[in-house]
Each structure stands twice: as structure tokens, then as C-alpha cells.
Image: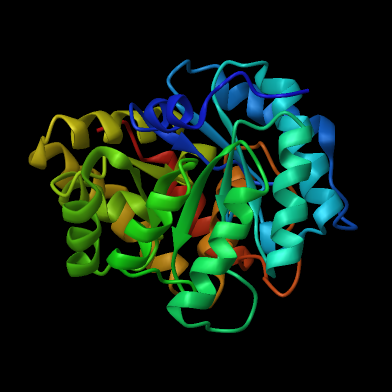
Length: 308
């Protein structure tokens, strides 16, 4: 199975709308549940608005999955999506493993790769560029590099990589360094598609739009899809009144619960699934699930939230 999308087609499609990062479903023993995962993907796709589905991404607990499990999740997403929207597969860890994962994703029918930060070490720019380039050279798929944590490319490094790798087509920001984003955008312009990737991405969506970041990864879409789409529409319309309403009424109270414990950026999304009666099971360690009190407060917040 191979993708029918060129890297540039994939990137331009992503830029046109909201991106979904589905959670990965586990049973009580933390084993992947393909059936419920595919049902969830089908529900997310049923709103007919997604321009990209990221399988086994950060919200999908990529960091807790084995490489074989990542491939299994990607295959499930491809099978359920049936070409309705691009499927972007997670890849990461060391260079050798990231290359293997990119190749496996291509064989599984994915349309692109989200290259997450390398494991543990903080390399210099030359080493980081070599890592990204090795993954780019290993596949025909379009690559989106996730700039965050210990894998932060500077503008000159991004430009050099783009010169040498036509399939490096996306730049996802998880740093929040506005100066760096402006440097990258000023240097590369429309050569790349830019994705907002800060947790929670909705908080930064409006100011990032001014910098050419037309889309972002919405974890909230997992459990409030209609709200997420309504908020995205308000962002694209630059309707500051509606955006601020959404931030004050839902996003900021949601963030307050998220910030009560380390590692809750993913845990609270799975809790949101439980709150709406579409449980995706527990998170895998080293993450922990929300407490009963936190889940109750989140459920109450969700129940009173309406599209902006």
C-alpha cells in the first residue's frame, strides 16, 4: 500500500483546515484496542472538516508505544480513513529507529511523517540536521519536523535542510519562541506549511495565524469536535471576540486543570473522552490519569461548553 499524495499535496492539504491528533485506545492492561480506535477515527472524520489525521502522534502517546505498535496504529488509521484525509504517522527516537519507523509508515500507507524530537540527548545543529536529513532521505513521504524540547532547529538549519530535501514540507512549532518562528517564516515563506503545536494549541492560534501558521493540532477535537471546529473558524475569521469567549469559557479553565499535575497534557484528553462517554482507556506510564475530582470538574466544564 502506498500513498497517492505527493509531499507538497499533503502539506498544502494540511494547511487548509483543522488537524486531528486522536488518542490511542488501550484496555485496562494497556493493550491497544484497534476496534475502538477505528470507531473513534470514524467519528472524528464524520464531521467532514479535517484536513489531516495524525496517527500515533504526541496526543496518541507515541512515546509510550513500541515501533511495532506505532505501525499497527498507523495501519488502523489508514484502513479507517480510506483516503478521506491525509494520515500522518509519528516517527522519532534515535536516527536508526526513526528511519525504520518512517519506512514502516510508508509501507503501511501513511501520507506523511511527523518527526518528533530525538530521544534524550540535546544535539548541536549539525547533528540535528543529520538526523532530520536521514529520515527525509529514507522515504518518499512528506516530512513535518516537530521543533520542540531537545530538537530545536534554527532558521538557517531549516533553510539548509529544505535546500537538500524537497520532501521536508512542514514545520510544527512546539517552542513558542515568536522570534524564532518569525525568522523561519521570513526565511522560508510558503516553502513550508506551518503547524501550531503548543499545548494547548488553541491558546496560541490567533497570534500564530498572524505569522502564517494557518493550522494547528487540536487535541480538544477528540472530545469536543464541534466546539473545536467552531473555534477554528473564529480563528481563521480573526474574530477576536469569539476567540476570547472560547478561551475564557473553556480553554483557560481546561488548562487550569491540566496544569495541576505534570504530564497531564495527554491525560486530560483521555479524561475528556471518558467525560463524554467515549472512553479510550487509561494512559500508559510514566503518565498518570486524572483523579476522580479532576475528572468530575472537567466533565462539568465540558457539559456547559457550547460552540463559540
